[in-house]
Each structure stands twice: as C-alpha cells, then as structure tokens.
Amino acid sequence: MKLHISLNVQDIEASTRFFTAFFGQEPHKVRTGYANFDVASPPIKLALNQAKEPLAHGTLNHLGILVDTTAEVLTARQRLADAGLATMDEDDTVCCHARQDKVWAFDPDGHAWEIYTIVDDMTDEELAAHANEARLGPGGAVCCAPTPPAKPRGLSLNMAGGCEPKSGCCS
Image 1 (cartoon, rainbow, N blue to C red):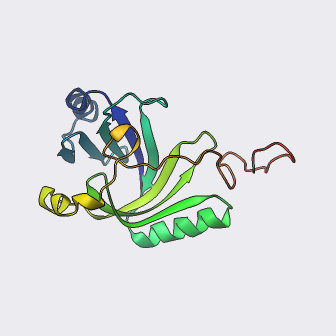
Image 2: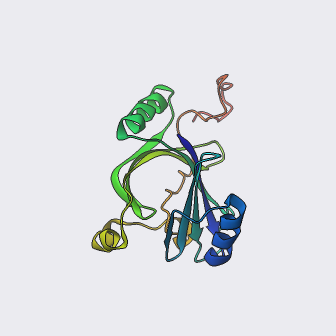
C-alpha cells in the first residue's frame, strides 16, 4: 500500500528535476505533460500533471491509495459504501498513462480521493492504441480526477461522531 499524491504543475520539466533530486531517484514514468515517481521509502506514488491553465483550487489534483490488487479495490469500495460514503467506481479505465481499477470518494472540502490498482502500466504504443479511452482532468491535466459534486452526498470523512440535525453536513 502506498500514499498517492497527484499535483498540477506549471513547468513539468522543472518539477521533474526537483522531485528527482528530492527523492534521489529518477521518475518511474515520463510522458508529455506527465511524470510519476514510485518511491519505496517512504511509500509514495507521486504524479505530476502539466496544467494547461491555472486552476481555481490550486495545485492539488487528487490524493489516493495505491493497492496491489483489484480485490483490494473491491474490498475498499464495499467498506466505503458500508460507511455511507458517496463513491464513483471506475473499472478498466485508462487514466494517468495506465489501465486501472478504482473507486473515488470526495472529502468534505471536495478533494478527490481514489483507491486504485494498476492493471497495466501501459507503454507508449499501448496508450496510443487506446487514446480515445483516456480523459482529461481539471485544467486539461492528463490525470483524470473527477470533478467533485456541487453538493457532496453521503458521509464526510471527518464525521466519525456523526452530524448534528439540520447542520447541512449530511444532505
């Protein structure tokens, strides 16, 4: 299991150089407008996305947890549903230059969180053959976090104690 952080950046080359030095290792994958680092210690999967336009919400694209198998995604999907969280499922989707199975949820501030597994870490040739399946995220970034709902449904992640009646937090 690894923490996943996806950042929108203004200069992909400068950001790639910075994180290469910061982590002391070369990126795992580099594509036009995209780079990712698969760091063993600490366990982090960092994705950098060239933003084509400034974003109102800043540089954070999305957060997530990388797991080893689709079975772990399915278990997480059920756990989130059992907790009453509103989720969005994506199976066999092409995103961030890889084929993935995932489940999304949004925290109370609208940040997208994914629990995902990489089914196929696609080569350039595979990606070109499936280019019509890929979708763009906010600001035209190549990583495709969904847009949060205008009014989040379900429980919020910070509501372990429940919510007060008429507070608006659960509607």
